[in-house]
Image 1: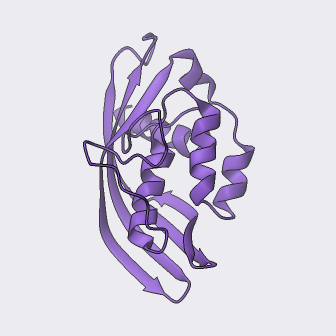
Image 2: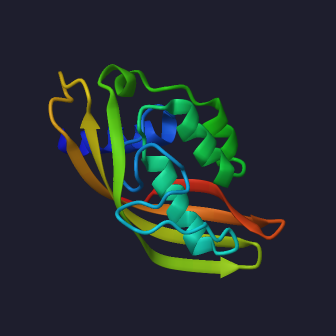
Length: 167
């Protein structure tokens, strides 16, 4: 049951814009603001490692503002991921329990680059907290996942084309 709950958290983040289930980046505010207590620095969109880590932060962080989440993710996405995110609707569970998700840690484990394509393996740890506890969401949850991030370079900038769980 616990494994299913963790999978639901990540599926909500990937499938539901209103539901982001992994704490990898800070909730609310500027989507470019880094996770944890780092000092702010501009994103280097010419570096696939930085873009993949920032996308994981944005994708799995959620502060209750679906449109802000969607805008932040779309800035770094390209198709097919872009089309899926653009078509997403807020997740009813995330809305009902007022769940916020904060990305606590992001670490690139590997990066392979070939021409205008790259693939990064990113390990992320996140914490989801219900604002209106009840039912299955009576307490905060923390999870850690490994994500494969596929990137494409377009006009000198890296964009994320796809993301999927490896574990």
